[in-house]
Length: 451
Image (cartoon, rainbow, N blue to C red; front, top):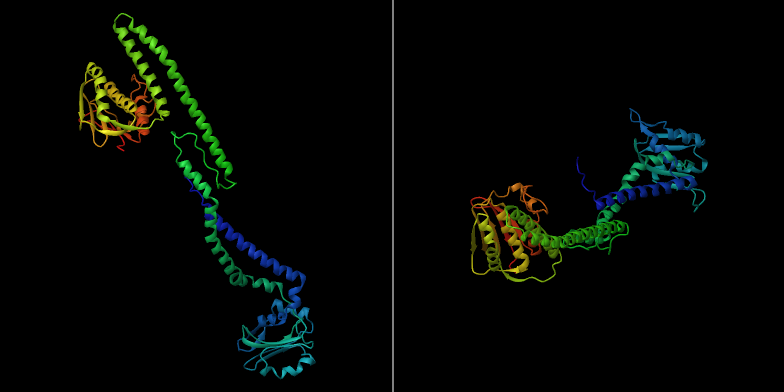
């Protein structure tokens, strides 16, 4: 299935507006000409109808003599003007004549050699076409002089025949100028009209799961796009409510679990020491850890206190002291490798301590109960927890940070420990990485901000 590229609103508008302008310009000009023809204004004022038809019809035969072709326009002219008359002559003296030259124009016949162009009319100053005209014009037979009356009108077919030339020489250049102006103006208009939408898109890119309650701004957003922005804001609001319900459920569940788990631990502690009692105490401890992890997640979500300078070496040393007995009883050696006596970072001491504790507990749980667990602190502000167990396959190194995901389904953990560590590092603006151990096992590296 192919994915179509999104269409550009800017160029779509440019193309459509340019085509619309060209079509509207053509319709306006054609409409004006049609109206003039329908009202008779052009035929009444047009005085070259006869000469146009004669100029189209005149030609030369094989011997070079002037001849007159019987064109459809000439046939219509003869039927429409029964007393048609004309004289056609070239500069070599060849001559074509038809009809009887009216007496009023007879004196001009002998003066054609000295007349270039003339309008002959018995009514001086009248707006109507003259009674006769003399004109030199270019034809298929060359430049010839035509002397004729003016009773022929403007042919609609002749006018339409000039339409392509009129379009190329008149409409097309004007439409090109308008399209050029549209090409430069439309992107500017689109950018201005959609500037508010760009601000909303930039705000949407900053929305994160840790920044709930964010709404896209409606300022300067076009009215046509407002329903879409409102729909997105409503969807964000519904997601926020659903997320809050989810968080509230986890918090309530964790609080409700603490009391029965504490009661269970008390009752198990009062039982006689047996292997079954030890296994039950271990299971109850896991329940307590799960409850604490759920509450830690909620506490991180509501973290509001400002960070302060903390000593990563001191935090790591405290974790080693607390968890060394558990590691020794599980069959591990423990090593603490600080690069220097103190190493400062910016953060929340309790959260960092919880993150390091979870990583060491994870190494105790999955290190294969053999070898060494090493906790090191290095410049500029990193903490590493290494074990010599089976390691983490590269394909699983992203998924193990998902909540409730377990690398091995039969593991006893709930799958929240590493997710909690990732949440803590995101809260601190740092990161957690999984590397290969040396020589075997897994290495979890925490990198903090130093300022």
